[in-house]
Structure formats: structure tokens, C-alpha cells
Length: 341
Picture 1 (cartoon, rainbow, N blue to C red):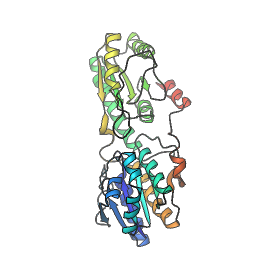
Picture 2: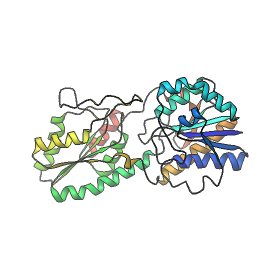
Picture 3: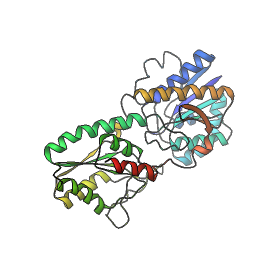
Picture 4: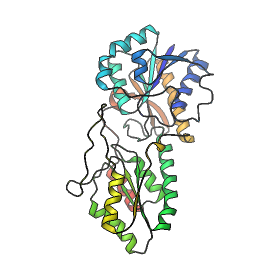
């Protein structure tokens, strides 16, 4: 077979592990040829590619980011480029294309699959919001980075009797905030799935100081919003790709809490540090397994499918099912977090 692979959307720890796994399984075990498209869907639309062999993927297992590069393409541009993509797949003699990406990438992959291209998808997102898989690679690394940051911030917060408001990634779901907040023993966790009341949050933090505690840690996902009418928050509009622009909930909350409590409050925005650097062992293993099974699915002709972790097994699920809805934090999981804070 001849297999194409690309990485699209935001970068994520473990992407290189998938690429390496695809090449090793395809070349060593099946005698396939593998090519990589540069900068995601852009590379497929423009025919910008390189050959991937064992030498080209040597030493990338532990590297963050993606050796192929990534980019975002406007949905309309991709829809208009279906015939160009089909032409490049045919010209290159590709028997399968393995796109690795999150929600937007998988929607594009499903569209191309429905147009007749031989697609096998691999899910990636640090937000862990793909509903068809129990876990996505990159999530464990992001949670580990956030947890370490929270652990470190506790000592400086206590030394200066501060409130630390730590903003983590999570546009529409609060999995990173939930897991890192629980792991680090944060005193309040705010997620997009549950609009917060600023009066309730102020009371929670204020009770700590009233009880003689010297500091408080608040973890908030970037996409979190206040209950209507409880606190003013500007709307950031949308970017050219249709993604909501956030206006800095961490900064806004720090100002609000400091004003209301009379205690120094500092915002800490972790941002893209959660995406970068060395993936954890768990993410390397999961990414490697996803790549292995994507190649096997291609050889079985299981196109229009996606690799997914179900329990401890990797299964193939329809791409169409994977893009129907996001996996959000359910009420019972949020309740568990509140009970242990």
C-alpha cells in the first residue's frame, strides 16, 4: 500500500509518536510506502509532501509538536478543495490517508470520507473532548503540566497570602481543569459546562481566609462563563476559522476576587505550555497504539473509521459518530470534584 499521513489543528504531545508508529508498522511489517503532508490539510490541498521512512522518524518518539507541521484551514476552503484533494490522492497513488487531529480535523476527515476518499482517522486533543474514545493522547501530558504548575503555585500563594487564579485550556469542556484541579487539591474548579456564580465563588474563597487559611487556588477553564447577570464578561467574537475568541476569564476573575475579598489575587495563564514539550509515557503508548491500529484498519479496508480507546482496547468506530457531539464533563464527575476539594 501507499499511505499518506497528516497532522492538523492545534499541536499536541504525542503527534510524533503516531507518525512514527504509522511508519514503523507500515514500512517494517507490511512493506508499504508512507508519505507525510506538510502543514495539515493545506499540504494535501497543495500536494506538499515528503517521503517518510525509518530514518526520517528516528528519535521523534519523545518530541512534542509535529515533525510534519500543522495549520488550520477555513471550512469553506476545504469544502471547495475536495476535488483537488481527490486529485492529489490519485496522482500520488495513495491507498489510504490517515489524518490526525481534533474535532475540526475529524469533521473535515468525515467530509472527505463521504466524498469517497480512503480515510482512517486518529483522534488527538489535549481537551479530551472526542466522545467516541475514552481518552485522547495529549490529555495526560496537559493534565500533568497543569498539576505540576498548581503544585508549584501553592507555595508562593501561601507565602504571600494570595489567591491564585490559574487558567487552563478547555474551550468547550473542562476535563483539564477537573483533573488537574482534583490532582492538585485546588479550592475551586470552574468549567465551561457549569456557568459559575461570582457570589458563590467569592464565598467559597472567602471562607478559607475566614477559617485562618493563608491562600486559595482557583482553577478555571479558558471557556468558562459566568451565569447570566452575575458578572460582566466581554464577548470576544470568532476568528476566521469559526472558533470563539476568549477574552481572558483568568484575568477577569482575579480582578473581581481581589476587589470583593480585599485579598491580593494573581492570574496565571498556562496557555500553550500545556501543548508543548515531551509527552508523558501514557500519551506515547496510546499514540503508538493508535498509529498501529490505523495502519491495520487501512489494510483491512476499514475506511471512514476512527481509532478509539474503549476500556483498554483499541477499537474502530465510524468517523460520522465521532463528530456528532463533544464529550463534556457530566454533573456526577463535577460533583465528585466538589466533594474532595
